[in-house]
Length: 636
Image (tube, rainbow, N blue to C red; front, side, top):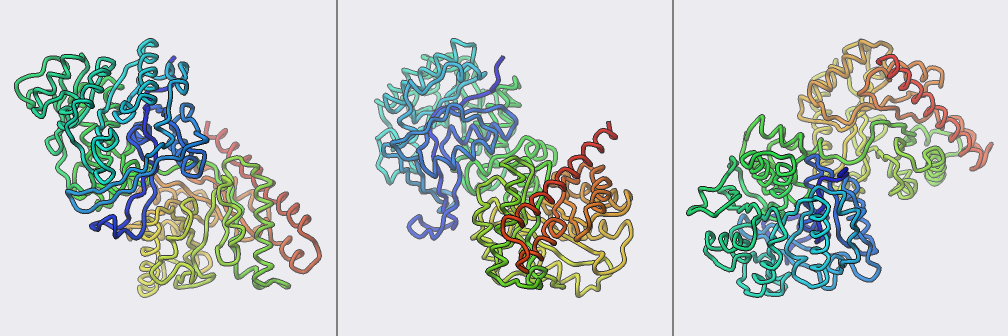
């Protein structure tokens, strides 16, 4: 049995993309960090489309290598074939968007980790687990990685696998152009042509641009080059023609490129061509391995390429399978796809990482409530929040489904310590108790403070609002929430919106649902909703229906506690757990309230405070888990 659909082999590096668009690399002031390297991009791109993907490469034994490995795992890519090189650094690429025609880039690949890939790194069992192995051109440019690629190809063939080549010709990586020529896509070289033609017979599928077939075929006449490739290979040849789409040739090369098999193209605005070929290849591999006809396969490929050229970055631009279907079904509304709000929402929501289908969150983001306690001051509050984190970690023990809510003003040290532990981490931005909504000063008047947040923190905002609020209040709330939502997205941060109408006015079964409808009407799509526990199934049904009408990709709902006793929470959890969109709870004072009062007053020490909060949190986790299990049994 093949446990993987595809393994890619070759380059793996970190892309540092200039954040500013329209300027020279010399003038870039900041960079966005993405996963990079054609095989790595393709492994992630195919995984997003639902294929079981793996990668064979090397990364350095340092932070950038760790980033690549973790990001691959987040995409669901098998890293069994990724070796850690203790001597060499992970490759880097610095690149930017100058205009619609120029995309300058610099490869930092001198003696890099992935070019040290060798034949001994190739595991026959891992290769044999895949239906196909896909190679790219760069790793054929040097004897050591070339031997590794050839071994993988031979093992794949011997074990019934298929093989594919993305020519991916980068002249400077073959040593026929200088370091400053990273953008160059074609330089004639008889030596490169010879080296490529030696390996072309190994492949069932060969893919390249017209210029890449020129180098593979040794002619700048595209038809002649294709015929030269055909003379040494029986592979299906797919020639990419830029805005004219692509054509596939399974047999003899005809008199015109137009006679090849083709799929529909997509007339969109080109924003960034870097990485577009890897997006195209991801779609192509999906169709090829699913056994689709070439017109359908090329439709997938062209669409993935179109989506890729419309966005910033390489791998982050590639679509999910659900997004691709949405794109086909709805069609193009505007050619600048990155500004299509509906499409971008689907892209964002279907490409989030992490399984948070269960949420057991210890909320100690409280500020005003702690400041009011006897014996509290900012330093002691900060220390107490560290104890809260210890309690949370003692219950979580590194397992999924646990999280914290902690602020950055009084709880900064706890936030620092929580980073990278696997805990879901929400961080509030609202000024405590403000109505209309006002934000913590650390966010900045332009919300630029969010730029400094780690990407795994979730922006949490509590908005005290009610359907009966007057127009002025609603206008003020809308302006703040909308700005905050867009700032969170701009900085790659998920957004949790909390609403508690019962503190503002009377509520009925439709109150919260009406607020939810209004929020979506603003164009705001929270990743998470934090809602007060309702006393009726009807209220839960109304809220859930309002969310699902507007966003079937939402992460879900967490239930807040409102300082209720455990017994009351147990009954509320039992009701909420009957609705699958409710993923869990985010509770604070029920867990820490009594311990905090005693600790600040000096009646208990650190160890006792941690133990009490640990036990309270563990019991609540058990109560939620039991409620969910009972609900699932009843539903079955």
